[in-house]
Structures are given as structure tokens and as C-alpha cells.
Amino acid sequence: MPRVFLSPPDVGSLERDYVNAAIDSNWVAPIGPDLDAFEADLAALSGRRYAVGVSTGTAGIHLCLHALGIGNGDRVAVSSFTFAATANAVAYTGATPVFIDSDAATWNIDADALAEACEEGLRQQRPIRALVAVDLYGQCCDYERLQAVCDRFDLVVIGDSAEALGATNGQRKAGSFGLAAVFSFNGNKIITTSGGGMIVTDDAAFAQRLRFLATQAREPVAHYEHTEIGFNYRLSNILAAFGRGQVATLSDRIARRKAVNERYRAGFADLPISFMPIPHWSSPNFWLTCITLNKGAKASREDIRLALESHDIESRPLWKPMHQQPIFKAAESFLTGVSDDLFDRGMCLPSGSSLSEADQARTVEVVRNLL
Image (cartoon, rainbow, N blue to C red; front, side, top):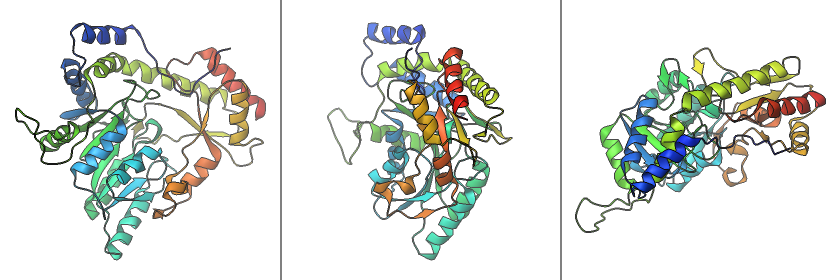
């Protein structure tokens, strides 16, 4: 049987049509009509006025922080329960990440722990300047509570919405919170451009600044003129063409991943398994179905992962928190114990929008046989 992957790219004929049209028109450079159209699509999908296509989601976060003037000596609050890219982007600027733990109700960043970190920063006369909040596994943060804390302590909010395109918090779309937010189009995301990202914002001046920095900070003159350091971070037109084909089917992709999640819930209904909680105000995009094993279960998360692997089925532990990572062992952290517990007991199951019911049934059977 072929290997079952966690979240593989799901590609149809529309992507080929867009890419072939871009090639036929010779728009293969890092500018062009497909990039303009893809940026417009993402601005609309996130409820924003502007979008700037970039080479990766990581580059997008770095660019936002750099454009804010964050650098050596600054401190930036970051979700601890995330992929390393979120924290790495802070480190690229020379700033220091301050890790904030999760709350049990959403698995996302805990607003109370953030407030504690901000208060401690003021006591130390080392205030936190910004927050990078992660919309984890396709579910938005509780931005109402987070924004109240950030307003109180004068923090700029950047949303790491890499995993959450198409999700909503109440009536607001993922990416619509904070000064700006960043999406990722890595190969495992709900839509992909092979590699790429997008920054969305309502601030015209900020969008213009981001676009300028992303194109090597080249001044608008006939010759090559540079008065500051920039970056080679723009998304290419041909990758944007591929993205246009992907984003056209976003609602269908979300529906299929939601159906995957519902089948897992039905298949595990009588087992000691819990799922990532969904608050009443949240409508996630179900990028990955994530579970935790209840305490006292007869098998561990690692037992299940290895059993699935023996059947050529890919699964992964939940994110190892940044405060546990060796590279960030000296970083200041404000912990609740939630993300440590989730990492110990939690895992991600195959969740792709192209996952067949037969392959999902294989996955369910392996887990059931253990539990």
C-alpha cells in the first residue's frame, strides 16, 4: 500500500492552467499579473486592504518585525507552542523572544500569561515591544483578550496565521487581527505555492514599506540605488499563478478536512482520546486533526506514532514548545504547563484534503487496535 502522508500537497488541473498561462505569457519574473491577482485574493480572504507576497511565511514575520524597527535589545513575546520559524524570525532581527504558554481552552497563547510577562517587563524596565501570536493548527487565537492586553501595554500585534487561512474568529477572518498577519504556502499547508507566504495589513504605509524592503530596498530611480539594507523576499509571479489555482478551491479543501476531522471523532468516540478544543466563537480550517491521549490510556502517544509508522502512515507529535528547545534554553518563558502536557500526550494525524476514506480507515484501525 502507498504511504499515507500527514498533509501532502493537493494539486489539480487548475494550477497547471494558471502556471502554463504564466509561462506562455513570459511572466516568470518576481513581478507580474498573477502576483497582483494572488495578492488581491489573499487580501479579500483575510478581510484586509493590502497584501504583499513573500518568499516564505518566515520571511514575512521577519519583514514585519524589521519594518517596525525591532532589533538588538528589544523583546518580543512569542507563542511557545509553535514551529521554530516563529521564534527564529524574531532572532533574525537581533531581538530576544519571550515565550508565552498556551491556554487549555484553545491551545493558543494565554492572554493572562502574556499580561504577566508584560508586567514583569515593566518591573525590569525591559518592556516587551511586540507580540507574534500563532493561530495554531488552523484555529485563531482569542484576539479579543489578547488585544486588550496589548493595548494596555502598548504592544504591536503581528499574527502568525501560517496555518489558519480560511479560519474565522467570530465574524472576523484569520489574518484580520493586529497591524499585520502572515500566511504560509509551504507544501503541507491547506494551500501551497510550493514555497511562499503572504503578509496582509490595512496600513497602506506599512504595506508600501514591506514591499520596498522585500525588493532589496531599491530606491525608485533608473540606476540601482540603496540607502538601507533590504531583502530578496518577493514571491515570484509563476508561484503566485500556482497559488491562484490552489486558492480557487479553498472552501472545498476546508470542507474536506473538516470531514476528515469528523470521521476521526466518530471512529474514536469510545476511546480515551480528546481532540483540540473548538471554542464557540471559532471556526477553524481543520488544517490538521490533533488529538491528545487521556491520562491512563493503555498506550502512549509514541506507541501510537510508531504503530502507525509500521503501517507506513505518517503522524507527528504536537509541536515541541520553544521553551523546551535547546537553542532557546536561556530564553525567558512564562509557563502554565499546558504546552508541556500537550507535547507529552498529543499528536497530529493524517489530515490532507486528498486523504481517502480507505486510508483514514487504516489509520483509525491501527489506533483502535492499540487502545
